[in-house]
Image 1 (cartoon, rainbow, N blue to C red):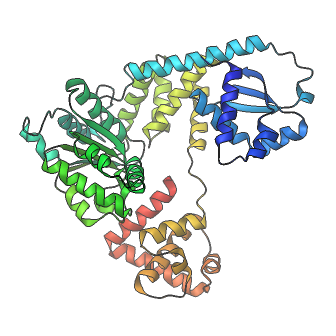
Image 2: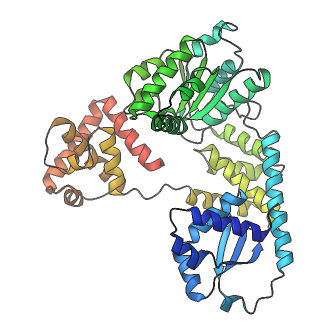
Length: 460
């Protein structure tokens, strides 16, 4: 178990390795920091003087916080003080260290319990409801498959494609499949990987000029479980390798399960031949949970964390946190933290405050003009420069009109302000905006594309 002092030294090493801090900046501002106190979840560090304190607060505080979260496994607040501030304070360093160690140990115990106990992502602790029952049933059927010839009726689920918004349980279902198969058939080779990890592996293999181990790893597995497969879209080498891996596994009767935030047909820049492979099997979506399912999730999460939450508080959480299971669990986690690390009672008013804080913290980052421009250009396979240019060819002109529509819908800019962005007059912008509104009424595919752009901007 790390002491307060050891943890700080490891955080300093983290900062030194960070790309955000130069070696000179580290030696001048980070290295001299000394531990002062640890109170509940606030770390207090002392800089050399008031000026150093200001520099650390202005330029390095966020990296230090990330360092503590990386080293400890949980987030803490960090307060920077100076000798001038601490001269009159009497800190019992041994007591602070013991308190720190106790808190870390409690966190680690909870983490181990969640890894080795019921909180593993299994079918048993997945809460079923109308919004996910089909996806659950399909995944459960796939997890019962032993080999290519054992259960013929599950062959229709190969590949199985689960899609839905972030935080609704797709990863839980993949991990549940992995857990059930490993438990019942430890001899089988199961690979769980994200689309990003798969991409990074193939890029490294290509750079090393050694793709054979990569191909052997993925083409010899019995179950391939890939999360966020949409990440491979637009990456030519990755898609090529995925295509051949998919064929090798499918032709050998191996099981493939994929997840994405949108259905395959809506994934921009995904090769048509890969989309056609996905269409061979079964697709199922997961929708945001209804009230009854949300309430069950809250109660189950509280049970797993061994905390008592009244029915009124459970209903309050389920009523207020609607669209994301992670946010539901985040509220219950915060309640658990209150019971573990503070003497503050878990009242109805306290939970209301936690919900408001969670709502604020989960708001998406500010949607800038550049973000809108980049998303629209990516969706229509043109560049931001082309949208801003005088070019009137059909694809660019359409993308430009969609940009005008989206930026007005999201940012509420006036036609004149949008005109300034594109160096066009007010009348042209007005006509283009009206053109898109008419197209949305007439063309459902076009409407889905524009809706997806707006949805992704608001959620990411």
